Length: 340
Image (cartoon, rainbow, N blue to C red; front, side):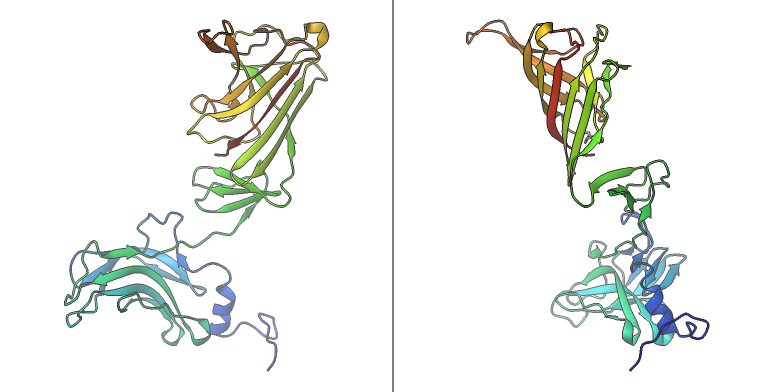
C-alpha cells in the first residue's frame, strides 16, 4: 500500500479513474440548471410504453452528459405484476462502457436503490420516479414524479461594489455577510461568525428631503442579524433645529425589509429642559407599499380627554409638529423586522 499523487510531471493524471476521482470534486452531481422548474433533462410520460427525456445536460461523477433533443426511453412492462411498481429513470455513469446513459431501472413497491460506487465505476443520478400499474406496460402522464436536482455553482466572493450578475441559487460572500442569488439580485441571508451589533449611519428624511440635524449631531444606528430577522437601535441627538418640513419624519434601515407586511418599532422622544422638557412615546412603522428601505412614519397617540368616550387618534411626527425638535433633544427607535 502506498500514497499516490497526481498530476505532476513525473506522475501525470493518466487513467479514467484518476480523472473521475479528481473531477467529481469540482462540482456536484445533478442537472445543469439554475431553476429546477425548467425542463432540463425532465422526464415526461403520455400513457405509452415510452417515457421522454427533454434536452439538457448534467454532471455525474466528474463527467458531463448532454442530450441535444427529446430522447425516448422504453418502459419495462409490468404485465405480470400483481401490484403497482415504482421505477426510476437515472443517468448512469459506467466506466466499463465509457459513457453516461439514461437507464430505466425497475423497482417494486418502493423505488429501487441508487448505485453510488465510484470505486467500481458506476454512479447513478435520478431524473424521475415512474409508477407502472399492475398488469400494465405503460406509464400514465400523471404517474411521473420529478426527482432531478440542480448542480450547484461555486461560491462567489467580492464586495458590494464588485458583484457579478445574480445566479439563482448561488451563494455569495462579502466579508462575513452571506447572500443568495435569485437571478435578478443578491438577497442578504445572514452574517457568519459572532452575531454582534454592527453600526450604520441612519439617513433622516422628510419626504424626499434629507434632514440636516446639525454638524456634530449624535446620529447612531446599530443592527444585528439573526437568521432572517434584523434587530435595530437608532438614536439621534441634534445639534441644530431643522426647518419646518411639511412631510413626516422618516429614517433609513440598514438592510431592506420584506415587502408583504408593515413592521412596527417603539419610539421615544425626550426634549431638552431648555426646549420645554416635553416627552412622548409612540410607534415607528415601515410601510412596504411606500418603501422597504426606510421607516416611513413615526406616530404618537393623541386623545381629546381621559374618559372612555374621548376620541383617540395618532399623528405623524414632523420636524416642528407636534413639537419642535431642537438641539439636545433625544429620539430613540428600537425594534426588529423581517429581512427581504
